[in-house]
Length: 523
Image (tube, rainbow, N blue to C red; front, side):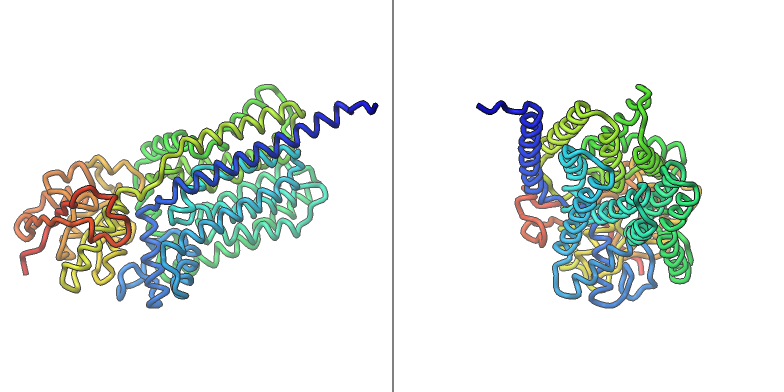
């Protein structure tokens, strides 16, 4: 009788367990995709408005006929959406298709990283658990550029990882630079991730100093050329070197931004658990005085710099950890690299641990629905499109869905994301509750009044009365204090029936929505 080899049997058992865990986790991912299908964010409609105007009218502008402005953060996302709209694909469907492509790129990069990091076979469980986070799934449906950015950054990092190995080549660094150059066009923070990883290669790769320097240069050359070319285009087209979103979102005091940023990273870790898990694993290795390999150090410094930038920017006001997605590749690859640095027993503990934590995060994900601004703003936009004479100039803080669903009208973005004057206002007083939220700090009542809008909606998408302005945004508060506003605008209330909704099911609203706005009465 043949005696079984205990080592072989143990290895086979681990393979079977890994496969079972992977299948169960894939099932959880599929269920979470189903649960979150209803989610889309109001800000996605800002991008889609630019994309529709470009795809249908050839104008890269927020309001047709006005000079172009850069109220979008991702030129690549706008152009891709415009191309899909031009060939007849519904804007929201196209945005979500791009999200799926980005998620696919992340998974491809993860598979390549398994080889590049010399990760054990059990690393397949860890990389899937790291990348297929609730944040990723939510933003595939959410309509913004986050999954695309994550996928492109992940591919760029794989190029850096392969170039940093002893048998790597400059060709890998160049390919990584190309991916990072494209990622920069999807979101500018990719340039910082590119530099951070290049610095890590220069400092920590186990290569002769000459080879490290050559790879550092190759890893940044093409992406730096893309960055310079885009900055030149931006300056010639818009007279600035940063988009309006930067001015609108970084106008808060540094202390407020840092506090917001730290809170954001901590709170968002629940929907992107690999970031905290990788950080804790790295810290534990340092405390226990275990040697971190060169690839672990490279990915560690990359993640650290990315997190520091996110904290300095003040985080984000959107749900589901949108700004954490660009950090997921670095965190996932750091986790894989640490797996390769520890023994087999710890590899199992770490891989099964991250799988369990990520599974809990997926199970905890609630059913997705459009955020409040998108739900209400789409209904308000449809109502304004049908009931206001053309053309009307409308001042709103909900700059996404309301303008998107009222394309015949002109809009003033009272938060400044799509208005250079408001975005670049300096020494802005903090007087309302929402001003400490990223992207909601700016406003200018006097400027909006000088534009003589036909309609002003104060506060949220459905509007509120001027005496409640202090609970919302600065423009509304400043308008409410102006005698000219009191003299020339009268309050109007309208009942908007759910049946008038053109996007979401009428079940979203149990009763008619009351819209409050102010209509101009002076000539």
